[in-house]
Length: 111
Figure 1 (spheres, helix red, strand yellow):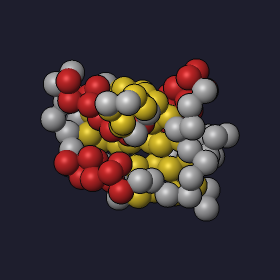
Figure 2 (tube, one colour; figure 1 turned 180 degrees about the vertical axis):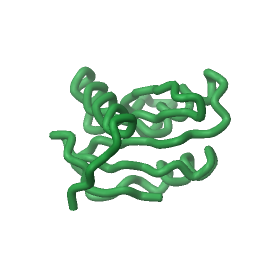
Figure 3 (tube, one colour; figure 1 turned 90 degrees about the horizontal axis):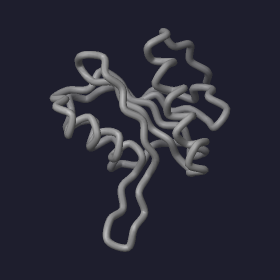
Figure 4 (cartoon, one colour; figure 1 turned 120 degrees about the vertical axis):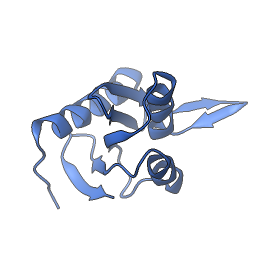
């Protein structure tokens, strides 16, 4: 399934894809908060801390004062997002998550 996005949603897919490429990471994510600010990230894997790319992007938004998210994007080779990604988005108001492949093509939308 290929979904056509509006320009603001396409922007966060592009930001997630760029974060993934820049860090050579398996996943890149980006979120847009309630006032239009965007945050892009990759996952964190340390001996004492493991976070998905979506969790890091959400943490960045929250630490910048966001109380709600409008949308999120995850660029990955996986066919579905992790449950913890959907859970953290639910915590922030249930923003839709656009799942995209490494080439940026949107594979689907998770609510």
